[in-house]
Image (cartoon, rainbow over all chains, first blue to last red; front, side, top):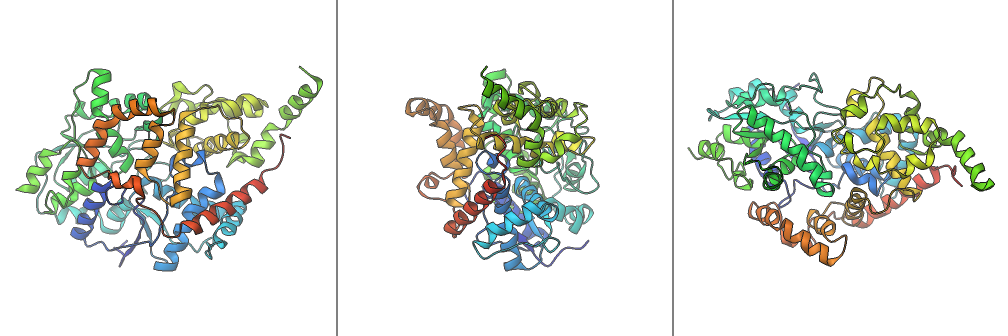
Length: 302
Length: 208
């Protein structure tokens, strides 16, 4: 596949300015500039309902949220691919599309709801819902990305933490659920070294339950970090906004509970690519890390 | 046990699978479970489920309505989709768990003061009101859900993280006074109201 003229972009709640993944949004903009990926934001997009929306919203209300985004995207950007950089946004959009296509109840209910605001979705006529990493892998290609770097991330060893929802239930075409390797390849494409056999690469960070069940969440994250250290990692990289937040920001709490001495940076793939393409520390949003990725900053500042 | 109660229990016992098939999201898949247990063994919070998914599926077929709908189990789901990716028969287990939790809540049977349920409701309310989630408000809401005193204690414990987030420009105190939202909030509210009406009409009245 080739790169599309532009993509219909749906950043999601966490990747808004001064929200918890502000550093994702900034570094993604830098990466897209470097790779000449054009994004047109869907005007007035709404939240997808994410993982825990089911506590208040049942099937049809939740599907309607994503259906509204799909309908707005079509109205504004025709059949351009919808690209979400957030795993929850991506799978919710894709799920809504599939459910409308396969379930008469969903199609009928969602369209009844959408008709209240003059919108509709039609089975087999909706645009594709894709993850940002799919664009990198399928439309641009990791070889092409590797060929364009100007500052290889030499001397950095990185654990590629894929997490859950970027990997399941849909995942990336051609990758296995149990041991996807694209993130490792992306690390290597940037000139860094990927941790071999990082066994916690698809383990759960506890998702939204980090907020409601923190002790259980800390125990899960402890293992994810421990395995990265065991593999000799200088830092962890992830494609997921919630994984990034959960793995980076509770290390002090985990240290208190378990007597560990964790202090490992957790960055986004967009930050690796931005730095490898010569973007500054600030453009790559490295100032948005709570645990500074000093080895990456050193290369960016060179 | 009264005759009436016994009669109702009998009725549910024979109908609960049908009730789930009719009223629970993706519930028509439940009968396909072959009891291999891969789902239960794959769950990151497996040890905390009173009844793991495999057991819930069998309990549904055995008509254990009260036990299934009143358990805290489904609220342990982190939405990691591991069960779903590994199920040899392709059951959309994550969706069924969400559907069961949502259905139990609709019937007023879910456990009281379940913290993920409370947090999820705040999250949903934020969407209904603003079209987008206000991270600061739901965070503060969760701190203060058990009253002011506990809230201040929680907020003090969490202040280090809050400060670090502000310093890294990933949290703005201004979010508390408005913040990110959609333009067409009234349209979104109208759409969600209609969607909920459709859902409610669709639910067959089994348990009454």
